[in-house]
Length: 582
Image 1: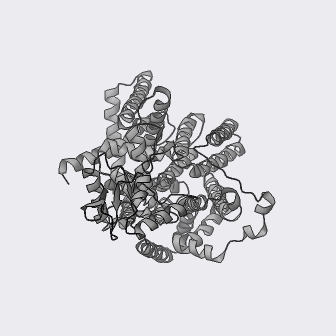
Image 2 (image 1 turned 135 degrees about the vertical axis):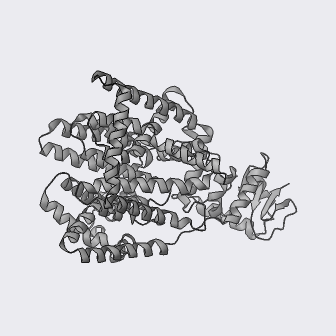
Image 3 (image 1 turned 180 degrees about the vertical axis):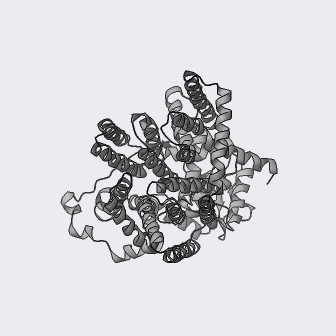
């Protein structure tokens, strides 16, 4: 890789995650709404929460093209507004900007030196490195996306950014796609790729690393609220990345949503008056655009903190949060592209049956094996301690964790016939165990104070077990690196006359985003009632040694990718495994 290109990638990533969030956070600090220590980890989240929804709004309001250029203009505008407001606040106080910024830089350096010298700072750095190693581990020896969802996000991002519109043609079939429930995430990766000019496989390595570091830093700041910052960061760093529950190690909506949930809770914990409400709503709106299922957790957090404010007789803050929850919920329910609720035919009486409340032993064993024994042992201990202390915001954080856990169980064992989406349970389960790091860390802190030797032994065992879980977790490779090179050859050498291919439906998931060409059929993300018929047609075609030319012509197929025997004189082999129809 060229050195200058690597430098540009680093600079572009820094700019992408720093603006307009940095001036916005500095403005909030200037208004004394948030401290610098809490604000700095929020900068990447603030940058994305401001720029990406604003880019989408510019598309709907002004017809601007969705893409890196519009994002750049929007980011520059927001940065300019925040900077102007900051300078105006200096002028009102009679401060000179040059002297103020010189003093601010000097003050920052003076504050940073003792922090860097602290042992906790180096421990936090070590925890971040551990988390980054876990995130990068699945890519050792395999530089391509690891999960089917990642390939689909690649394809949808290319479709949306390539056409610069909310509505775009499906990269797989050419059919019309009217937006996406996860459009915020699609724009997030698409704009970053367009701005940085980073090759797509590298995007799926770099962005999870950045989101992992941001998530661990936010977890540390949240953990500080319950006197357990390092332990919280450690437990979040050890969260598994797998095929079922996904995780922060994959570039999927859940990874970004988890960081947004942590940021939203941190903002809520710092809310002393209504001045911080716009920032909270901005984060919640972006969370809704990124991953609607995780937005439920955001709504739960807002409701819990609204109750906390009302209990403390801060009526305005409590009422404002409740009204904000109601407004966001109604907006989500009104937009069918963002929220789909399918009701089964069984009815409420069939749903609320006793067997639906039984937690199967095999499921509990699965959770214990995947997420780790430390959360199940230290979590209840920390929960009891937080409940007994009855202090804000520890009690609020515990309540959020418990409610999200109940939501996860209800999606799996109570509301299965209503939602009919196993993924809704799985994603909420990951968020729950991520939040469970807070009471678990509080339990670890108690154990440390009770017996340092026992705590060191327990945490060491937890880290070793987590390493084993990460190493032993299987990942499927949809295509090999050789097949990826074949797809690149097709992209670069087969022109516009060759538009659609037939191949293994599983490999077709990667074929469309890499080549930019359509496919006869690819494995879907969700349920597809026509799947059996399509797969049978593909099996029959390849089972007949690709001799059915009528199948190719009737379906507009001009490319065949296979290693099977070919018995069709009209199919010409242009490269190993690559055939074109004459």
